[in-house]
Length: 190
Ligand SMILES: C[S@@+](CC[C@H](N)C(=O)[O-])C[C@H]1O[C@@H](n2cnc3c(N)ncnc32)[C@H](O)[C@@H]1O
Image 1: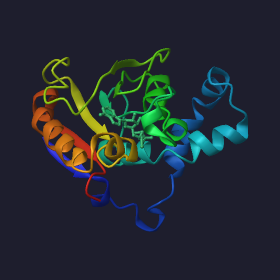
Image 2: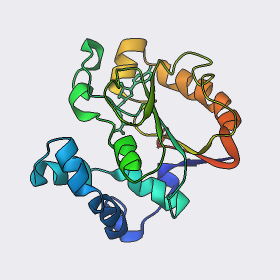
Image 3: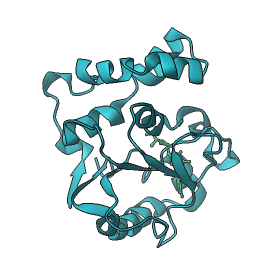
């Protein structure tokens, strides 16, 4: 298993931009997603096409993502929770939606509801020590997490140490569910 932080990956001068290759990948499913989520082209560009930094990092570590199994922790949700304030509106599960539309078979986990999503999901609290026990051994090529361990919703609702505690608990479970050469990709500590 390899653990890779976002900050260890470089995209040359285009560090903070979505590359043309990733945009092309998203464009290939744009029509489908715009219809499915009732998005205008402008909304799609803003919320999906130009916002998918996580897909950028995923393709950077995997190369071709075709057929790769990805678990996204704290994947986002459309549901409302009074604890999560502004995150309710910013954190939709676009990585899982895109991977699903591309024909991958992603799994998303979030504490908030994912009811109605087409991809496989589990709604559970990742702070629980054995939160990933529901998943079988050696079943993912990548376990990904962006803005979870330091998410304001988590730190406000569970306290300032909760991010580090969650990271440690997740880190302890990751080797079991990753394939031996799998990657734990996240932005914690960046
Ligand atoms: C800032 S959002 C990031 C969403 C997504 N990863 C992204 O990059 O767009 C943080 C997410 O973590 C989820 N979350 C917070 N605390 C959690 C917990 N204890 N267990 C599972 N998910 C949690 C929130 O519901 C939210 O969807």
